[in-house]
Length: 430
Image 1: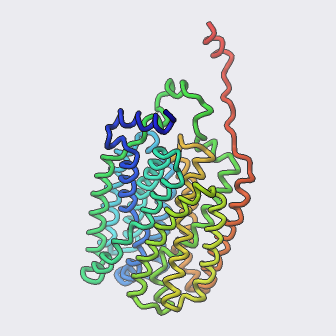
Image 2: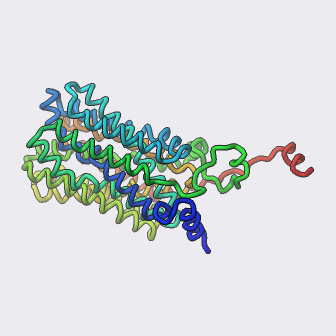
Image 3: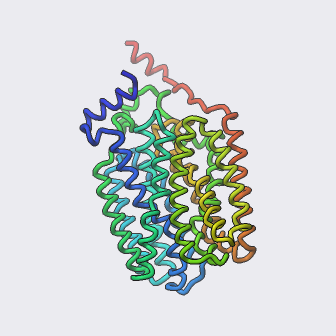
């Protein structure tokens, strides 16, 4: 019996044939990711109505998106620590409440500060769900990390697609308040239900008691966050994650405003948002699967390079409705895979013992990138035009592409053998 078969047997014995099945756990995590997809990928539908409702500007409203992404990312290290320590059940229940209440409140606020607060609250919940789901995938599928991470990331990228036409109809028929309330309530309830299903595989969490930790083979334990942050490997990976994040976040936040400025019809913009979600999700699964065969660095080089090309040409050809939709789809198809490529890359280099916490630190790169993708991006577009914004994003994607060739040439970090004191050795020999 190999290690995977042993893991399966242990989990069936501990959780039963249903909850102990790793595919059931992956599906549950997928459902949770779908429930947080609207928070990011349906946001662009709300921007124009919120500008009118709050009597504000697009740049000011888009800083709410920046704030959401920053909370979604910067909370992940703390959320990951709590997930690694206490497991998923309690944390996902808390996340469901934060998401349900926060997203529902966004339609009832009458000030920009209220919008910021509610969106940030939803961002904290999304951070817990995202980190927890990625951790579940990596832990249950150590033999197929690229595929599992791709499916989880694909659910996030694809999840808003069925909701887009529903939200659009709610916005047109019932207004902003009803659209936020209906989707927020549904998302919160489903995540709480998922909390009752999710489990970490037996033996995959770091024990809480010092005596149990001491019994483990220290060289088999993955890098702790402190150890990881001291390596040059992490900071190169982080810079790549940040760089490739920018372009997709600009598209995510500004599909509708950019389309309006280019003279694209509203119906075509809604179609573009739906197809962006489709190509985003498919791309995450496709490139994650490819990475298990070609390797993570080669897959990054190909996909990130293509992303740079599509970002550069979008403002040039984007005034044509057909090219607008196709180019948007190509950008999202070659962008979303960063969320299926970087989690297994991080686990490949630093181990999976602290998977949720460590990926939380890496994911903070998305928070910094959101500054360019949200309010600052909208401000630069209004001041200098979309050509400048997308050209800058293309250069950053090109940097990530080039660095994917450098990454495998840096020696993989090695943990030092723990030093055993003479006193302890003496005690154990008597």
